[in-house]
Image 1: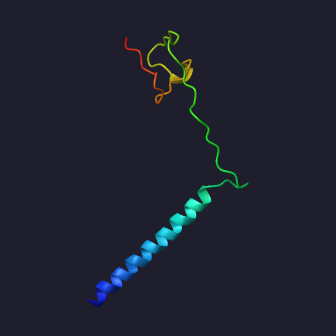
Image 2: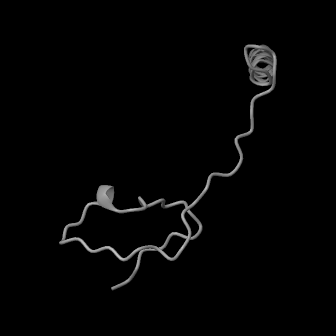
Length: 81
């Protein structure tokens, strides 16, 4: 039984240390160095269809496409040929 209570005390101490660490992280994350809150940048602009027709010999290079591919853009789709 003594080992069980010792393990419980150690685990509870670990939990308390982790809670203290998390409180400190949350306190430091709330404000910037000058004391103001962090700026919210808002949504970024995405290119909208219709996109210009472009052709490259295979294998093509994404780096020369205009506009560059944005795989997380809601309107971006690879044209099927």
